[in-house]
Image 1: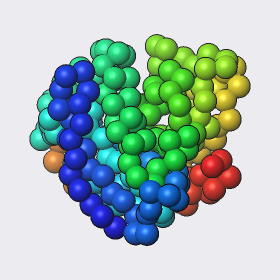
Image 2: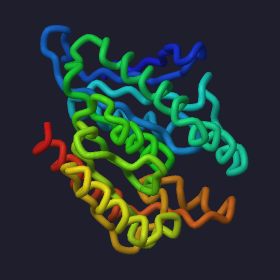
Image 3: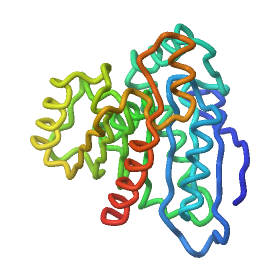
Length: 242
């Protein structure tokens, strides 16, 4: 694999991404590619690790920057502020996501008509927002992301097939959120799959989540079984969707 730090522009601001190109990728053999959207901590080692995992599967992967200039949070207060600024402005969210999407589409060996977006926690909410807005995505995956929205999908707008991996014991996603999300997807005629992983808390795919949860007294924890199962389930979803 080829790994490189990259920069691109979004709304006049420099964004710090991380691009991973799989071994054997060529400009003539165009293949699907993956956008990875980070947690509310910023584009850190975890999102970059996920980008490498997708590259090992043969996808060119770009871990995008949603905060600008590579900003990362060191505590929940900073993270809430950075994520809140994005949530508060749907236009900012779509501009920053769209800039990463445009950058990825231009990479050698990428099929611009087959782009996957995958997000974790905050990133899952961002990926779902991009799908709801009708951005040209083939597949969207949300892992322990928020499902509630003020801009629900409308019939005929969503182009992506949607996969949601939710922690069955995640206190940040209410039972009514799950019900509303499934109704939203059905009403909008979206092909989707929602899987609840029993006992899994928020951030269950991040190996550092348990340590972070204890440090900041947050209800998050790593769940190895749910992590491995959701990764396998998403690969199966990709195989039948792309």
